[in-house]
Image (cartoon, rainbow, N blue to C red):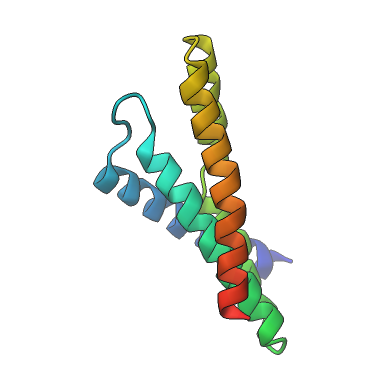
Length: 122
């Protein structure tokens, strides 16, 4: 149990650092749209789809693989808590169109990215 927690913690820490660096590279907002968070969410969904597909394809992969990469790294990398906060901020400023585009874009493209990653890896 302790080993599992440590694996998830290491993965989460690395994922969080990667999220931060990508957000710095892309930029937080442009025209009121949080591109950094948007990009990380879609890339994270694609990555978790690929990892999920690989674990389905190669069933002899160690559970360490899933804990470190899917639960830890992807959990630390994706930013749906930030996504929710930014969405609420858009609603609070009555920016309903931007909120709708941001929310639907994250959800729809995220699901598509997971499916593409899963299909590609499987």
